[in-house]
Length: 121
Length: 165
Image 1: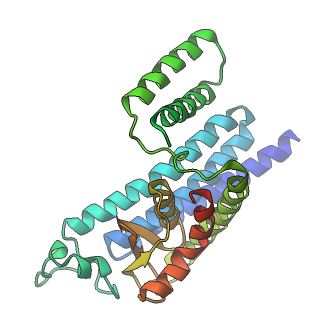
Image 2: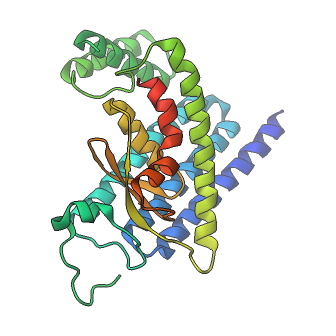
């Protein structure tokens, strides 16, 4: 029983860290801050939850505390992502050139301002 | 919800968290927990709580389970979809900020909806204005408000509507 839990915990840890790795790769590859936040939010949530679950399998006594950490993560992670994106947009950061549509800028025309010449996109 | 009930709910939530985090029922730990939880509950009577605006319990229980199940499935799909996008050499993204509408009235319901959207496939809530949400979407299918609402919001909204009436 102990070895089975250890095996499951190890597999969960590997899966979790793989998602975290892919999130890191996403941070490097995505073209602008909004897409990078997307990569950061998704990967860290599932990656960290799986890592916590793996740790719970290896150390069953910690399960409740690890569960609470997961719960905090589920509430704070989207909140900080949203605030970062909002602040970036309000601060006048243009989405990358591949962006198809920006309803937020259309409805708040003065927020982004005219795109400067030579600005990277 | 009345102010007194709100304070009691906040106190109970904080106290349960305190006990779970400490993992002990020693008297001195409990006394400190009661004092701190009581102080916070009395100092912040206007803070939001997930227990605000809750519909009657029996109706809520099933919807909460369905919401969590749907949420977890979406969360896993989000990660697999993102893994594919990040690993594909061509980086197949089609990003944009779309506008969607929610039918939810309760502030807590809207908060949970925005959070759930942020955690699901390629969508990130940027701004909430009254009944409108501005969502950054990595792979925009449609920037039409109704179509985008149907594909981003509808799944979560169905259960949240039951939970927060």
